[in-house]
Length: 327
Image (tube, rainbow, N blue to C red; front, side):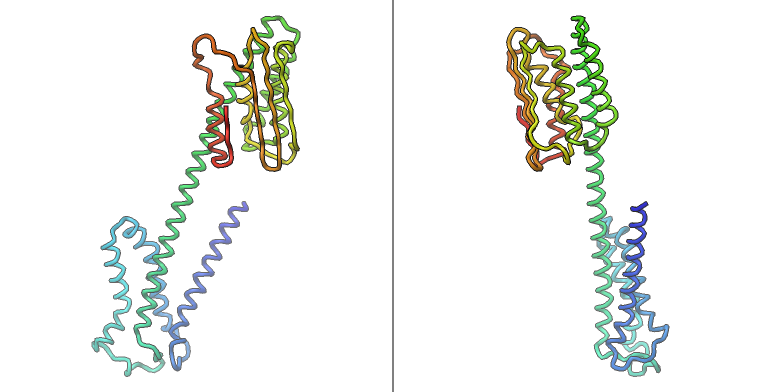
């Protein structure tokens, strides 16, 4: 509704500006006259001709000829119409019709040569062409930006949609492991998974979420991982430094780093460490995930490797100059 009202106001303002401009054009010849007679309707002939030429050039000649690169035809038609508009003056100058010193009563005598009227016509042509070409450029640029924004939104939505199934697949594997061990923590793991899923389904659809909510999501995920891991074999630390309130972040942006650490940084034979640190300093966020490194065993998993390339691409799209990521 607000956008519609704003558009209406802009249109009204545009009409007012155009009307004021043509009123000014109508009074220019009177300013050039030594002794202007009382105003008569026929004095509006030239301003109306100029206005018709302006809008004909703006709405017809530029879009249909100039914009289609028919330059020769465009200039021929534009100059031809300008000549037709000034044909009476040309005929007077050629002596074909009554000269200026036999002007009828009430006609204005110009203290400047009639070439000034030619200048007015040419200025109207230049202004009309300049406004239309500039308007076309701004419209094309605006359409290009809108298309880029739509493409960006679509790509981000696609990347975000990839995160959820990838995360759910890994988490269900973890709960399956607990169930196999007949662990008493299995119900708690399912409850925590339901909390994570609630966030993913109902909150992560937003373009931005509170950083505190995203941090809570990370903490719940890490607690879920703790249920299946022996604290004597895996040291897990999660620290938060700095105020979280008042900051927004793209949802599901940090979880792939944490998920990757739990997937590749834990060994069944060796003591493992995972350290997740989130530091907030004014408008900057430093997020680090450190984990133990172990030689890879077995073949390549075709389902792995989605998370980190995904988040790198999202960072590049969201913060092309302000975000960096390392692994």
